[in-house]
Figure 1 (cartoon, rainbow, N blue to C red):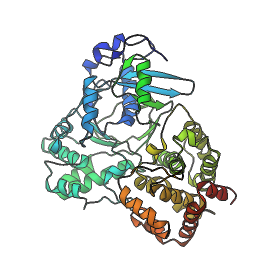
Figure 2 (figure 1 turned 180 degrees about the vertical axis):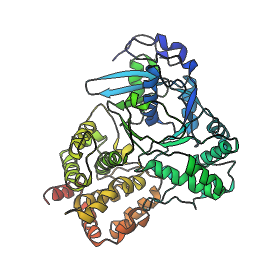
Figure 3 (figure 1 turned 180 degrees about the horizontal axis):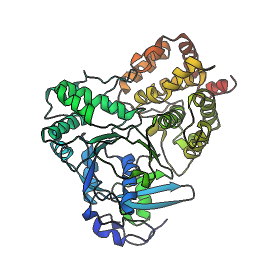
Figure 4 (figure 1 turned 90 degrees about the vertical axis):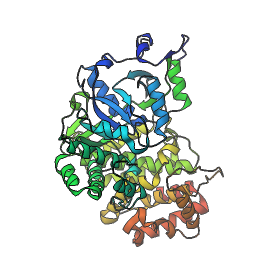
Length: 495
């Protein structure tokens, strides 16, 4: 992939100078007008939702559905600076085992200032041209109790927004204030579209927005609940963190991009067709529009996202760098396959076009893609949100109607062992969860008293008192500390 020509800085006025092998926008970006504000503009959004809008623009459609980027956290400011310096263009590098390809996409036309009080964000969301506000704020960004799913009205940031509704800290506070201004100005509400990995993400988003609005103005809350729309959606594309290797791959193609994104050669987006202010013709870009997202959500969250946790936790303990490396490790892959086939797949129903077994085959192929350097550390991040969301629903089903839960209990023991913060080779696992200090203290105390881990009811809820789960977990954690992860996996494989 060596490139001998001078690097071309990624900017609108240099697109024509990029190498012919790099696909570029065929639409006039200066003629686009915004219809979407997207909050939480990380790599995933640019490789996924933005790509779908780009496809429509390439077809000559959706000219009034361009994207305005936004963030509510101080760390978003660096990404804003990088993207504005290159006219909000992004190079997407597709990592296909058959060969790497690149395209530049341009559906995003501005990035709002990051500021206290979120004034610019609120003003833009209150503008009548904005008909969709979409979000990728991570599973842990919804102020939910990880076990019950109840919106945490007592969180200090939520209390602040309820008491200071015109100067909110959170994305939800900003959205409530924008809804208030729209109602006051005689406008209809926008559609709020969650693109995070939460089952029933639209329903959850509605709960958060309406719950906060009710603390501010009950009539406003009723208006949002009755006239707004919160479609559920399922999103899927493996998008690793941008590394120096990705930047080098981009430069090898002749492009000087300060914020390129790499992604696998697979995308899926399933969206509930429930919009209150119009929408782009997403189905013409390959989005599945449906009135029942639930089956797709369950299949993806349990098999793919749950599978990621099966691999990443033991992978971190054994110092296996990437997910594709885990898929090459005989012990790890044996553990992964047995848990999937015996304790996850039996509770996942087929969806139109594929069965759970067929979907697992696709996931295995995607996870094994060695061109995707998706680190076990990235995938293991925020286990305090991801285990309750992705693995514990299968564990509850296994307790209710399955013959075995030993593999899922072992997965929880691996999470505990990982959170102790030291690998089996003695190297340190750096903090990797918003609740890391508490998790690490509990994990270390659990070495002598395993039940302490599953007594964390904020994650395990009623499972903390289940004798069958407790017995299996206690035995596995004791085994892991005494004999190591590989011995535990070997015992599980023959059970």
